[in-house]
Image (tube, rainbow, N blue to C red; front, side, top):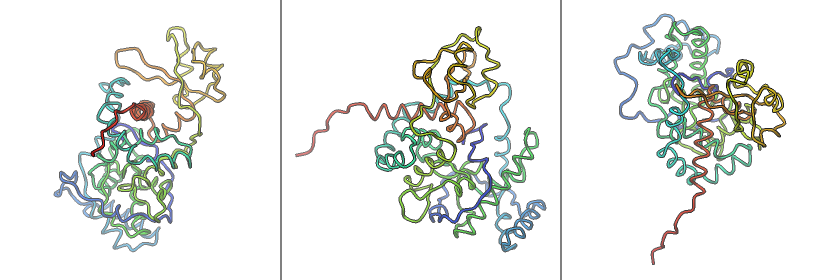
Length: 367
């Protein structure tokens, strides 16, 4: 998940699963330069946090001392709440600038290495779920640079901070705070069911974990055992992470074989943009309806049978870019509610695939 955006796998109903979770989660190492300050106040000192812990223990029939102690060990991280606030007027959207952050040489080369290393797992996931390898590779690259940037906040600190100190200035503060309280509960539920130490996992400032940055509730709903070893490890097992990302997409409406979007041409002065952009990124118009409103699709788009969305991507002071998004484009936005994010994932994956297909000179073998 990225600043200013909430990944939709952070906004799911709270459920539990009996799937086993690898001990790697419990042993996720603390890296140098930890984001958790050792002198930050603990939530054991906060009355409302201890009230929440007591009520949670009673509702779940968990040991109250354990719940209070565990939540009490969480520390307030003052740098996190401001990251939850929407961008101000100065945060003008710019697709070209956003794209350059992710579709760039370092990430493409890392994606090629990841694809080469996990070619069999990606092919297996593509066959099993119908989600193309380049979409999965794009997700891994945008989210964590293929595991290089999985976050160094202690997850329990991030979740507790947002559960009890979510910024009141946020327009949906009450709902967001309740959501993070649910995620904190899910982290403890994972600990109860699988014997992990809830104080050990590290992740993003919002509590997302692993190669694909799954929140606790997404972990229990969509994570799968990709290699059949009886455990689920989204930190150190790329096969589990690959299959879990693919499973997430299928659960959110991915349709195998359907393109994500089509190119188009339009004259903003001659198109009723207010009507076409009103549904935002949800497909709502047939190809014929778009044409009637002045949108010129390419031949493949003209023959599309389902609904489409007119996707507008602002380019700062320059004219916006537009594409026609399908249900599969919408499925990518279920991972993160942003058309900019979705197109960056798609185009990064395409760039990696293109690089993979480039002919390479033969390497002379040693005699």
